[in-house]
Image 1: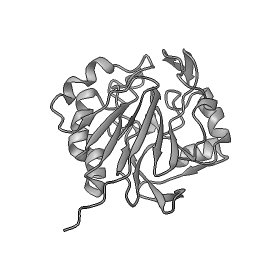
Image 2 (image 1 turned 45 degrees about the horizontal axis):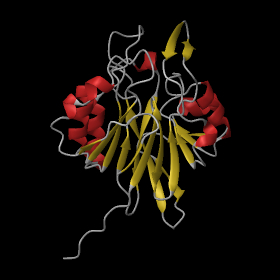
Image 3 (image 1 turned 45 degrees about the vertical axis):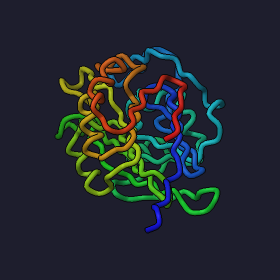
Amino acid sequence: MPESPVPESLTVRYLGGPTAVLEIGGVRLLVDPTFDGPGEHPVGDRALTKTMAAVAGPGEIGPIDAVLLSHDQHPDNLDDGGRAYVERAPLTLSTQAAAERLGGGVRALPNWEHTELPRPGGGALRITGVPARHGPDGTEHLTGPVTGFVLTGDGLPTTYVSGDNASLDVVREIAARFAPFDVALLFAGAARTPLLDADLTLGSAEAAEAAAILGARQVVPLHFEGWAHFSQGRDTLAEPFAGFSGGFHLLGPGDRVTL
């Protein structure tokens, strides 16, 4: 029997926090843009503290076809520099709430619905909105809506971008429709704030469990450093993935990997 074609590669350039540039099938995507330097970012009567400077500015990342924005209501996923970038981006895919608040080129991509971006060599990259739960079940009225994304296309690696999801049940729901995955970009960090006495994103151990549920061949963590409210980080990620049978890529800011 003829061998199955080898999927084209995905290149991930990690910029710090949740922010990464993805290149897949000739399409360039920017995940959750954060470009500010260290400092305080108000969230209502609270504040989130950014602890790491951006490693690249908007003018240094090259042209982007679309922004994948998990949500707009928290500055660790969209800071001031990120908001300015979204204002001039050709297309941003996000939640309905983000589309209503930000306007312009921000477009809602509801759960399980998809849009397609043309590839330079022909064909399309399909982007599907998938659920994300930013904390324990029943706290959505406090944390607000969040979305994740699945990237697919002929000859392309099936890729999951989790967004700020803390629920393994949500991961199972996504896996039931799309697994196995070639690549999983998992937002980790076990984010915690005074808002809730609970993790608002996956912890390190949960990220490893999510990778197993997804049947992921390669994993790149995001959203695990650069903000003071991340309760776990680089030093806690490696151990849970010690027995992971696929590739685990714990990148430093500015690093890139081709998968």
